[in-house]
Length: 345
Image 1 (tube, helix red, strand yellow):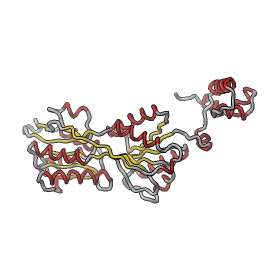
Image 2 (cartoon, helix red, strand yellow):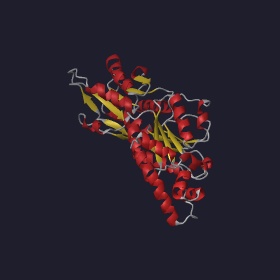
Image 3 (tube, helix red, strand yellow):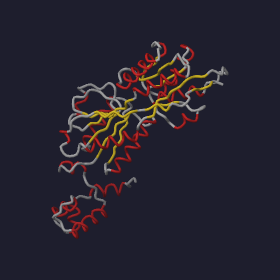
Image 4 (cartoon, one colour):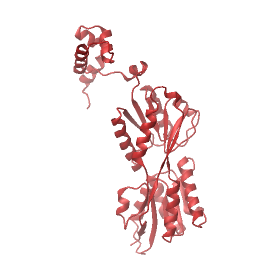
């Protein structure tokens, strides 16, 4: 709801002092009643709470935090929410926060370190009890000073920080390895890969899993069949023609959700009349993959489980939060091994 200017000004003027004056009750009694102090009678508390509600009184989260009560505010920093994984995770996590009485504040960083820093400063100002973040690739220790003292959970990616932080990662090594084996079993021997550049931990790890998969099926790594860059839609969309037309790739494994969407988009537009088949394994497993041909393979991500583990880790921050040791939780991804072929008609 958006307050009118008059209503907004009124809300700003409503204070504990003004409520006390309105009711003819001491300032201390009103303060105690609104903070849940048991020394205030139930009848007086109800009277004060009802009048405060009628006047539009809003508790100060900062003042509450200064009393040591905690704000129950949780920050979530994501590069974007156009990525299907980030959007689905944000939705699942928001439901978990609601279930546990936490207030979720979402910031989008566009993978830019300055936007990340601004977001963290804003979360510090409102005394967020924890920050869950997909870290930007190019943060350095000097830039991470704003994070010091915060309860940080790094999500999916990780980078070295000057303060302790927990990590929630997806163990997709076996799934990517299985994707290579799956495509080789289908008869494809020029299996390309499009993934994030090595500046991202996920970019390094997923590429290594692809390389290990090639080795396990007796194929040599061909650098011409590998495209790496910023993990976005355009990388997948522009990369597929390069692999198909320039390098003769017969199959593709994608190392990111947006990359996968870009790749499948250009593949579905390709109608060269050759009747050739092209092997494909996407990253993430949106429903539409199962609708294409006889069903395309995808790497399924444990989104709901990831959201639940995030809440558990935040729960560990209650009380003496800074004494909570950093922990890494790895959740396993799995290959949805459908047929995995596209036919160019």
